[in-house]
Length: 274
Image (cartoon, rainbow, N blue to C red; front, side, top):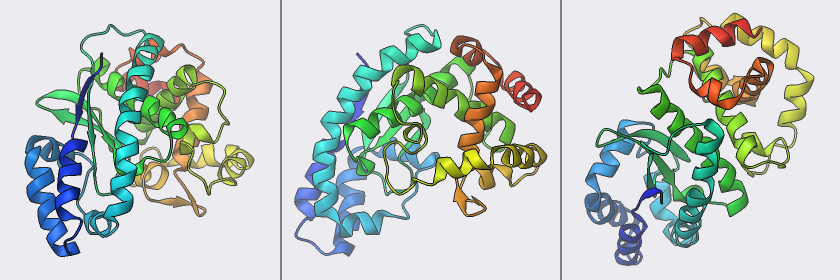
């Protein structure tokens, strides 16, 4: 059984109390009735990539978010239980130590994030992003691959190195394909979200040029944001994920071998893949 902490009952209690209140009062109740019930969880979440920037929008649309969370929580628990054993086996890792999982409602700042809670590698699943089981199965597999990868490393990897992120994201995509096979290729990058039909064809058409550009950017301090963050490459977002997948495919190594590499070894093999 996966180690899952589900905060959705506290969210439902908050929503029930806040439903008739103004948005300003709802935000205060969110802090008191929801975050205040799990302060250690939200401290850890905000210590990572979670932010409060979208909270006002979430509480304004509370009815929609509440309905989504009711659907998401049981589905997410089931997906974690189904995906995690297959993923661990694909990576060739022992069953312990295993990641912790926290189901929470964030502020639309991130759909999932790997962090630390009480010193343990923890995967925070943000229920407000739920859009159906089939897409979320892919996201669970991808992010759980990151969590197991960090356990195997024994440390939190760097977030400011483009070569490492190419390895890290490419391996998670490869692991997702292994445990959730047979999906359309673009789903391994967008997890079932619509509106990106032209993204993969464009990347494939410009692949060689993109690889050359990425290679030249590896030592640029803003490369991570450009290729993996909010930056754009010729008006296309998250192009680094496509290149990460291409580079891991070039390595042609089994997942257990990849997950056993140190950060330094991973950086070197990515640089050698060009």
